[in-house]
Length: 218
Image 1 (cartoon, rainbow, N blue to C red):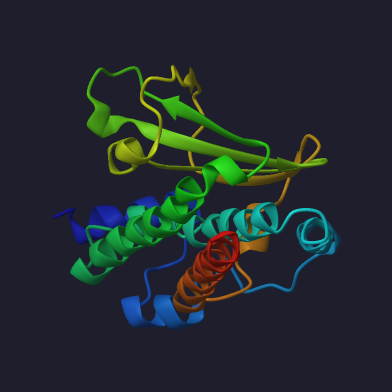
Image 2: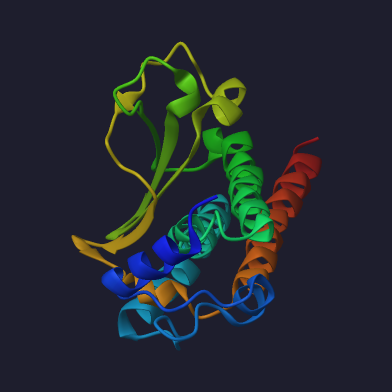
């Protein structure tokens, strides 16, 4: 367990606010230095493009919604990691972030043959130990690109291992229009608990759509 005084000094030096309770963070977000915000023009354009894709390809539309929602959940990782030794609840929440991302990324991989412009890459972190590897999912639609990473080992049996995946050094999650990234603050328009619910809901939307299409093909 990290010394409490050391935690406090590091927060002051890095400009982070004092740690609130886990329940406060889960319900209200990282208030103090990171307020919940309304979508700006950039984010509204991203949302409009995702909605536009529905008219062209519904599999792509559902996958884009999942990827975008994953980025919102993963935006909480840095805060959780900074405070992970301060509370067992925070450690569990960090693990829940990973599980939520994995669960919904799997829905994309189950459907990957039907999703246009989905690219899979691997970040090996300069290690031969696959436990340290990350599978990187990159999805494009016109000028919109959404990228996220997830545990490689958790996804391995759902990808074609005979394919030599391109290596990348990408980590985390990001949303881009052209070369411009969505500002990280813009991912904080909902508390973490609500972001979890949104991600699971859009994941289930893809499941329902896939089942509907499979039934129609019978």
